[in-house]
Length: 455
Ligand SMILES: [Zn+2]
Image (cartoon, rainbow, N blue to C red):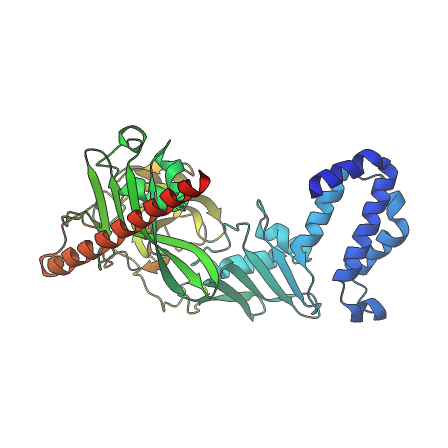
């Protein structure tokens, strides 16, 4: 509707007039966005009143020379930076392809500030991959220097970077666990399993996880028959009303013609089939071919060896000659290949079931971003890149986005349900199966009723 109006407008009104009208519209919207107190006094003559002036007096000539595509890009840019009352606070919504240094330069913050914030982020690496939907809120002082910055990742996760010295920042994670809401999604397979699962309300990460769960038992592209039923008990994470985008599969049943596939998450966080056999693929303790000495342990309260400040050591360090092969401890997908001024060349791998690993200070990458890797595959050579006290591998293991001690953490060993919790597991399987069956029945009754109405 709006679209056709716009086309109509473009057809009927001469180009020069179109631009004039757009300029007026822009000026009016900027006028509305600009806080009234500042409109009257015009004291803090920032960039916005300047643009406003252009909008009102010179726009017809100036914007006349701008092609429409550039004009809309310019408007988009204005809208990404939210207007706020306080002139020392800047809010910036991340667009795809944004980098911290580009964003900082638009607020006249130099590369030194970028470096200082990146140094604070070394053990978190949250600023390395900025995504649309993330938001930065910058607090400047009267000299235009950055005092603090909040990175909003989702409703349950924010990171605050605060200036702690003239040349140094420190970070603080602001986490909210939220609540997990359960839902049973059911459907029949028509076309691909992927499309059918999407129709039922599962997202890409859910579908990837389901694929991984049954990878050894079925080929999804070939062996799922049309009309196969699936039942999924899924939880989604919410903080207040807002979804954080995190979800997990708690139970799934796929009723194929000759075969029923089942997976249930047990109280140890691992998946087993209805008989209690493991669906996990084993994880190696070390990402190395040989056992080696540890030079620095996982330590959330460590004093940084170079800055001498408390800064968590989120991994385990192994002293290694440069060029030692680093291997994937489990199957997964390479999600990051980055070169960080302090973490050096590093890799991140997302594994199945909420496990993630990171490898820092590498000398060479043997994989690419997006590549699938298997347990035991060589992914890189160790090195001494970034801020490092000597050649070593810094290895991190994260479970559900939290760093844990890679040397002692509970890792999947691909063993059946432990004997002591076998009875509890069987009871839960029975309960959940009954719930999912009931939901399937309800859905069938509902679609039958809808068909009657349609007739
Ligand atoms: Zn380390």
